[in-house]
Image (tube, rainbow, N blue to C red; front, top):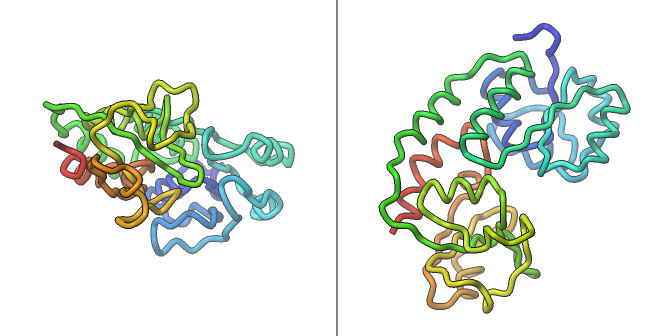
Length: 238
């Protein structure tokens, strides 16, 4: 471990899990939404979109790890203005996740951990899909919003043979009307950020098969990547 980095605050759940499993004891702060590992015992600093900058500064971190999409620039600028170093990841593809995670952990002074090697091997072993499907991936309702262009989730699904029908939308997370979607043969409903359920979501897409999936497997980049490679192909395959 780099002697210069002894105290880390993470304001992204995926990165929290990655750091906590790679170097137990290095994390001193995380968001209220950082649920993994389950036994994580650190100071909570509110959410990804509204972190308590003062509380983070008070923890005297050597580094704060963040994400370009998950966190707001004004909060990151406020941390930097207070003299806190901030490392910002930008994860939009599956291969990019492996590279970005390795670089983030290196910034924390850590070597490439076994779980990251396991995740890469797991995804390398996933066979190329023989049949492709066309899906919509809602993330919210009232209003309806879905995964759009240039996202990690879209890239992960594409690797599994599931093409996002809203992947060409100008917005990364566009609003949509369930009755006016492009042709599709699958609806993928994660349990976060909106907690879709068997009785809350599928009924809006009559005649189209819906699959309920763990949002952690679909949207998190970190130790959950290995489980995603093992579980998602069977859930989303034809």
